[in-house]
Image 1 (cartoon, rainbow, N blue to C red):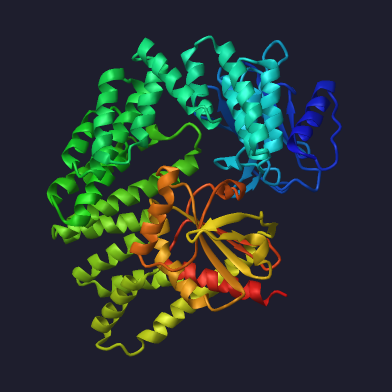
Image 2 (image 1 turned 30 degrees about the horizontal axis):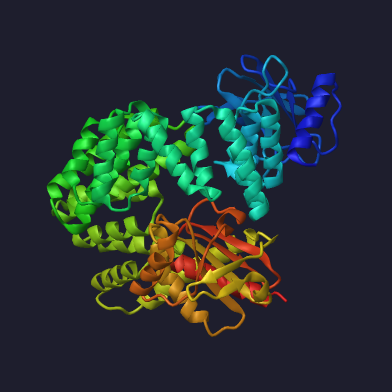
Length: 630
């Protein structure tokens, strides 16, 4: 039963006041049509075998409130044991609430309805879903989840939700443009384009010159082959209203389309002078200005902007400080900026918690951010020769991050410089056992061992023992992480213009590594991907591809950008140019790797980069497991 039908059945039962429950149903909600200003009773039933948390001693419901004009709001609802189930109550107070996403937690365990969290529309007093409710559900179905609230992509379902929204609210142009987007994904081609084009003409006629609507429609004139008309309409609107919605949107687009940072600085300053942004818009433009200044090497100017920002992001201080510290320039100034970032994060970190994030998740993110800034600060102090202060900051950074290759490497270098060889070896041993070491860490490990023991005798055995431990841990994790889902077929061009089809690779183990030239973790992982490719390129049963996606350049410049990057780094593994495979595979961040077995099923998925040794150990073991499976 799909989630919408499940919700309908439960709603119907609630309306009838029935205490019956369909076999296998886990959650129910009352009333069936939640409304703003009223209580929603949430019940978790433990009788059915499907209840993941049937043995829970403590239970909470997490409700993500999707809002019309603001970021989502996460509410935590304590649940009380009542008979064979659990019940909790949420007072739905937020006027912007349009869609409720629900899952249940007990400790580290979660019940998210098998990866399809329960979702409920919010209704008005007239018995109709509020404007934007069906739209919110449609947007939710177009992605694979919102933060920790997961759901299988359902483009057909999304199309139906947008259509229902428009039945109730024909003037919801956001829903209309979303409907066009999903139509073109489901049925790309001239026929759909012509249908959208005709619908666009009707929408433009109805809008009666409303600039907010025109901002939404202008890109669709371009997408349907009417760029000249879009330019004319845009020019007329800007001439009539030089600081209006269209002018503002056009200027924003120009800012973020500009790749030259010096030119982007000028565009941002012009925008701020012309439109006088306030609130969150001002913060967004100031953040963009700091970033552009930092990338252009105008660090003092970036710092000046930060000094007048109402709520500067600590990470921005980290960015400008690291650029200088890495180069060994203006160290005192850079260390001061890093220290300011640390102080901001320590002082009022919790006030910065996003509305959509739980305190537990925020604590984890806060620790990660603080670890990164402390590492920058410590590295600057290290270069200044302030070794005791550097060591203290490195140790805190390493503890907050729970390890980590780069921070561990810096900590080891500091220990070595301070003559603390045993501590350096302890960090190295821990990192190797986690499978997150690199060549520099091994070199420091070896030199520390020799300094402590007088020779290299016994080091190889000690290193091999740590690596064997890491390998066993990787094996355990791999056995638990099998995905076993059919891989979506594709036909993508490589850099030679040849079309590569997954269907043609049946019988091989296939690796798809999604990446972009701007992605730091992607770039750090590539030397190891090259080693893996070199080790298996003669094996006809393995095919490895780096799938380029999400590039931040114009599409016509993309291939040249990718080709230049690959050539400059002397990589020889095959590169594919993605069209929309990244969406079809539900990729939420890069790098993301999929390993597909010889029968065409995804068996392994990994997100991010945790270290070269671990990556190589994992992939080699994955190949071994999948090739041994007949």
